[in-house]
Amino acid sequence: MAHLSNTATHRANRLLATLEPKDFAYLLPHLEIITLHRRQVLYEAGETICYTYFPHDAVVSLVNVLDDGGSVEVAIFGREGVFGLISALFTRESFGRYIVQIPGTASRVEIEWVREAVNASPRMRLLLYRFTEALLAQTFQIVTCNAVHNVEARCCRWLLSTHDRVEQDTLPLTHEFLAEMLGTQRPSVSIVLRTLQNAGLIRQRRGGIVITDRAGLEEAACECYGKIRRSYERLLPHTYPPVDEDVGSTVA
Image (cartoon, rainbow, N blue to C red; front, side, top):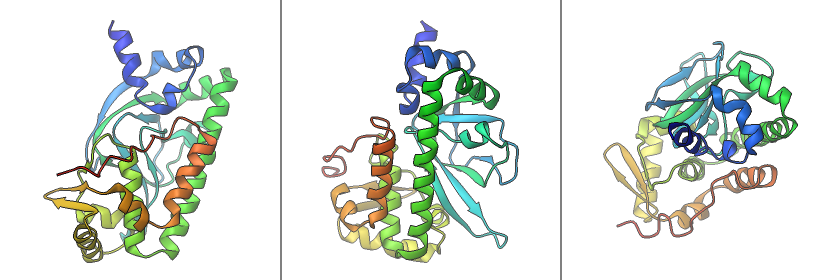
C-alpha cells in the first residue's frame, strides 16, 4: 500500500506520469521523495551533480550568478519536467545555481540510475531528449526576453510561468527574490508590481503575490511566455500543466 502511495506521489510529476508502467519501473525502486525548502540552494555553479530531481509542486530556478554578485534566471523547472537531466546524460557539472523559489516536494534519483534507465528504455530516452529540447527552447527564449523586453513584460511572463507550475493563485515570493530572478533592481520590481496591482492583475500581501486576473497578465506579458508554452506543448504533449481560464479571475 505504501508502495502504491509512493507511486502516485512520484507521478504528481507530469513527466513521470507520462511513462508507461514498464518504463517507469526502471526508475521506481530508486526514487525517493524529498522536501525542498524556500531559497534552498541545491547546487552552485561548477559543483558536481549527483541527483536528478522531478518536482511535484516545488518550483526551482536555474540562475546564472555573475562575478559582481548579480544574478538572472535562465530556466525554470516544476511539475512539468526534471532538472539535473543534462548532467545525468552528459556531464556532472552544474551550469549555474539551482535554487528553490516555491517550496514543495520532489522525486529524487541518483543520476547513475537515470543513465541506466535511458540506456534500457528507448521510449524513456526519447521522452527525456524531447524534454531537453524543450528546455533549450525555454532557455533561448528567456535569454532573449531578458535582453530585449521591459521589466513589466518580463515580470508578467515570469509570474505566469511560475503560476503554471503550482496549484494555487498565491505565490510565496518577495520583491527581492523576483528582482534576482529578473536580473534587475528591487525598486524597479516594486514599481512594476504596484502597477500590476493597480490594474487589478495581482494583489500583493506580506511575503507573497496573489494572481487575481490571469488573462490580464497574459495580455500584459511579452510574446516569450506563449512561445515557451507552445514549445513544451509541441514537444511534450500532456506534460505542461493546462491553463484553467477561471484561475485568478475570482480571487476575492
